[in-house]
Amino acid sequence: MIRPSGIAFALYPVSDIARARRFYAETIGLAACMEMEFAPGRWWMEFDAGGPSALAITNYKMPGVNTTPTAGIAIEVEDYDGLFARLKERGVAITWGPNEFPACRCFAVKDPDGNDLYFHRRKAAP
Image 1 (cartoon, rainbow, N blue to C red):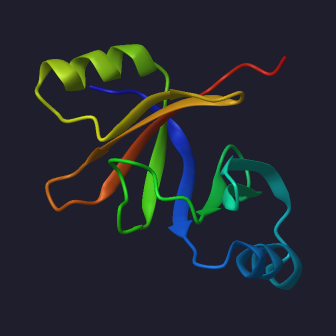
Image 2 (cartoon, rainbow, N blue to C red):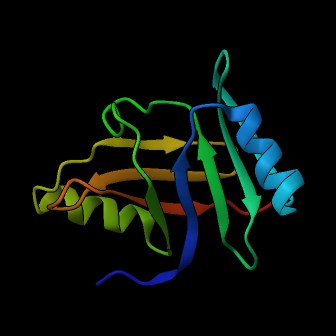
């Protein structure tokens, strides 16, 4: 049994990152809280959705996860390493990761219908 502590982020793929950023930041009024360029012109951006949650947008196709980008959700988990080990032990294919980023750790699996499901653990602030 995992112990989720909330939704880390909900993810939407976008085709035009600049247009999407303007929409979410300027039109909707959400505050950008993180931006990362994975490759030239390939971005991941997060907007504060309240509490520990964020709305993420990306135009980056993550190898193994979204050759055709799909929406996804990330569950914040307390025992990230234990969950990763249990899923591997149960034969669940890890489709992306595990990944280490400055602010977090994250990996992904697909559910039986092919939906992307991410597991996430924030790192302590420096």
